[in-house]
Length: 550
RNA sequence: UGGGGUGUAGCCAAGCGGUAAGGCACCGGACUUUGACUCCGGCAUGCGCAGGUUCGAAUCCUGCCACCCCAGCCA
Image 1 (cartoon, rainbow, N blue to C red):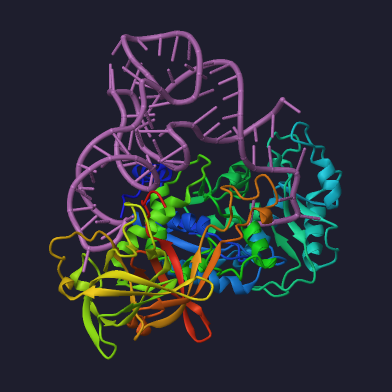
Image 2 (spheres, chains in turn purple, red):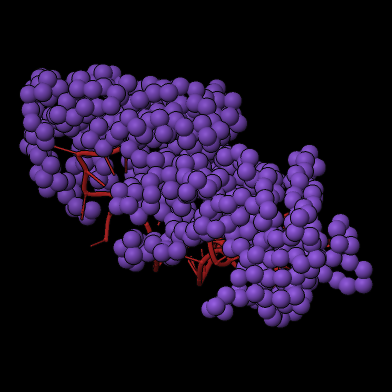
């Protein structure tokens, strides 16, 4: 486990603690319940909860549920599960909607202070008044209504007297501000006929993020409100709201760069599209960078935490290589995953000098470096399977596996020699005949060197399985950059090996444990699927492969 | 052409005026009954560019350049 980077946010916190500005640090993770959490969220979760832990502070979970048109209670439970899976426990759980009544009262205060007004402009008109990036906006004709009128109008908005979109509550700031977020931003909109998953039909006006977030933070005593870079422009508004409502002390918003990972997408909008259009099987498709997908694929959450530590936290836009993630996963799995043997593309081998009515029992350690993980027994028999890729009729010196007339070590068992190829009518190799050297069990043969070692499975006790191999979901590093996202999908992101065979000990394998299938990679039994009664295994990640020269 | 950000190796990322950490990737080599793991070694005379200040600059100043974000009644 690597050191946690002492990034600029932690440095700020150190300073705030040293200066006495804060005695205890409070952070929050504020997802909107409108989609599944992904690795980008993991970065934020690890950041926020990590700070909470390391500074003996508190981290809240707060659902940012101010837009009932897009949100769904189903995501609430899924998000909770994802956070727990990542290994974190929140101090308090809140919904922004818990504060609707308070938010309304604060809005009234703003009106009373002449800092907010009811505007009768519709969306299109508001846009027209907003100006452009280079031109100032123009004041709404309703900007200077009396406080009494505003109060009455806002009350009637809440009472449901006005139609959707006919009026809004706006902050009265500065229509000429160079920062567009300060050009009298909308605070409340009218939405009839929606059933909010938490508040039902109690409200027909809903506050916006820019208004809700700072107040929610303040009410929870959040000291550092961490969000992504695109909100930097909103910080003056965040501060304006709190300042004009006399909050003191005030939480500090600090922005950091969101995570980008090559060959995949980390935006809720794009992930939602992949799911909705059926390009993947669901939010938990193992090819997706969603936490649900990664969990199903078999990623240990510890590896995701480690990955988040390795990438650091900065304000610079970045595109992290997939290799970075895979490395964190391999590091974790190499240390923890019990070893097993599996043959993905079986080729039958008959050991002609091994009696058909005989089987042998061999012992193989579960881990090459960890005796504490114990051992399992292997069955040896006359008929075994090896992988088709581990045999060639002829090959150059670099090829260390089996060739006709050559020898290879069967992992944890004998050295065998390939004597003869059996073909079907089409010339396809369907079987190999060979012999084993009984003197090579547990020791190297005398007088000759056998360089290759391959995995095998006894045909007598083999467990049939379907194995799914995953590759990057997209074929370009930045999907959707040059053309439509869908065009960039990798057609081979899923490859199925329906005829795989596993060593017998895997018959009792636990579903949630990742195994290393030696020489192939790390695999985990699929939580939900079976194929014709056969277990399904997902490849989490392949083994690092430095073998040059195919 | 307005405002807000960011530029250190192929990719992340330390560095906070004293002479470029670390990780990933890559390249050598050792070990090996996993072409894995592990171990050893290599990998920026250089910090977007150009000036300036200083005994000394990735760090300070000036001017450029490039890239990202912002004109939802989304978050």
